[in-house]
Amino acid sequence: MPVRYLRNISGKKRTSASNRQLGAALAFVAGATNAGGFLAVQQYTSHMTGIVSAMADNIVLGQFTLVLAGLAAVICFAGGAMLSSWLVNWARGRHLRSEFALPLLLEAALLMVFGVLGTRINEHVTVYVSVTVLLLCFIMGLQNAIITKVSKAEIRTTHVTGLITDIGIELGRLLYWARRDVSPETAADNSQRLRLHATLVLLFFIGAVLGAFGFKHVGFQATIPLALLLMLLSMMPVLDDLIIKFRSS
Image: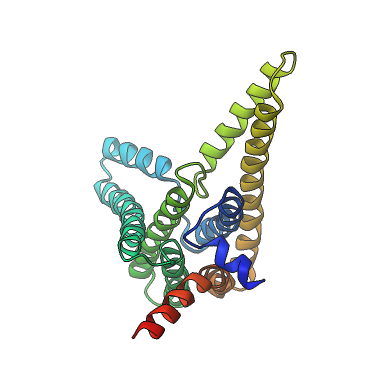
């Protein structure tokens, strides 16, 4: 990939194009991590709606250990989002070019940790499965917050329910406008949003298929390409900051 592309996709200066490109890459990573993680720990870790609903069910059923497990997952997801926001604001306060790249780099490192933990699951099933679930929830919260901050809440990468809802909304607008005169700008804007949301869902699905395939045939090492992809996407703004710091010291 060209240096300029890598600098723009996770850099401080954002454009609609760079937001779409980053969102597409992160949707793929989220799909692969979520589906592959399910094969590893038998639980989807980006689905907070399902986890909260399961907590309510388990309260009624008297399964309070499962309630606490669900609460821990929600806290970890929120904690990942919180840390992502803190990193962005910390870097922004220091005028760093890597304010959005730093959370991506952290996510890459955590995916590597996930791979290391996975090799030990068979040795200590109860402990490592629990820790792995919480780690995956943390990673999903971290990633969702990154793209939310980058795109000013216009793009989500782990929340497919919202994406499909947006697709339905845009299709409804197209249907309503079909027999009415609308400006070319309005029509183009609607088509662009529809393509974006459909692309994100498609890439999430492709990532999920490949992630599940990778975990089935390779195991936890399937996270390594995902981590390397995130490192590649985040490296240029981080390197730029390191070079600036080196030259000024």
